Amino acid sequence: MSLPEKIDPTGRYFINEALDITDPALLQSISSPRDYLVASLTDLVAACPPTLPWSGSFAKGQLYCGIFAGPTSVAFLFLWLSKLYPDILIEGKSPSDYCTEYLNLGQDKYGPEETQRSGCSLNHEYMCYNAVKACHTKDLSYVHKFIGNLDKLTLRPTFIEVLFGKAGLLSLMRTIRYWVPESKDFLDPEIDKTIEYCLSYDPWTFGLHANNQSRYIGAGHGDISIISNIVMSNPDYAPKVQGRLEIILNLQTKEGSWLSREDGGSDLVQWCHGAPGIIWCLIPIRRYFPELHEKIDEAVSKARRVIWEKGLLTKEQCLCHGITGNAFALAEPQRSHFLQYATPEAVRAGLADGILEKSSDNCGVWWSEAGRAWGWMMLEYEKTGLGDSLVDIGYPGATNP
Ligand SMILES: [Zn+2]
Image: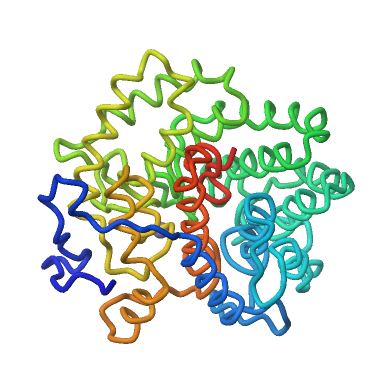
């Protein structure tokens, strides 16, 4: 399916040709996501094979960035595939084989210290490598390496958000606990300590420079994913963040979106900033806020109207700011309708004729092919009736169970 022809004058999104269609039978549906999953994985291992020199294009392949970008990011996708679809073979190798290989590409050169640009969590290679390695091997020595480094991550004490800050550490600890259940006794006290640390800051701000801090609210750097990580890691803390959650819900615009910052900012429709990320974060924590059910449901349905209208982005399809991530903020059949524009053919054609803005990454799970494969994995999970993929799988590194 080729991309829609008309682009909005802002250049940000394709005009959704199905905007006013209400009969689900008239929307495109995807019958075999698994074929797209296999095609996407085949493209992935061809563009960035598990060999050195590393051919990832983010930072010219010179810098590994944990789950955000680099081989550990790709390994994280294969880790999940090794659980959900262990029998899929790509070029004769299983997801578990690939997970092993992508974790063996010189990650040991990355030390435990926090650097000016590493942050302490999802972008920190050492922390992510040890987390994913622990999950894949079930070897507790990696859990202990991870835990042993927690108190040393002190360079950026004000980083609370998910990509560089403490909320990302909560996510990594939750992931280890999920995959290696016997680590629970070691991790739970660290999780509570980290939650208390997050709660000691108010308001949460983010900015790479100390004198340029913003009050972001979206999933990429803002309050919503801090809240969801606190609650998903220990639901007992839900009452302590309910007030903050209500503030976010009240910031929804009349149209149904959220601006990037509490005091204004950009009106973006993507996972990192705006309504799609907020939906991704709200759905897994909804059950912990019984008093807010009505408010959350209203916010989600209002937000979905904006995403349906403005969410077919002209950026290369990805989870963080693209059609794949936006699709999962919608319900079916709109979700599948969006995803038909994120197939390997649609990506190739859109990049070849220059209507898509090419990503600066060519493989990772947030910005590129591994993220598109992640989406096909989620759709396959849904279509085979296994459950709600936003709750059971989630956004890589940010809202996994
Ligand atoms: Zn983004």
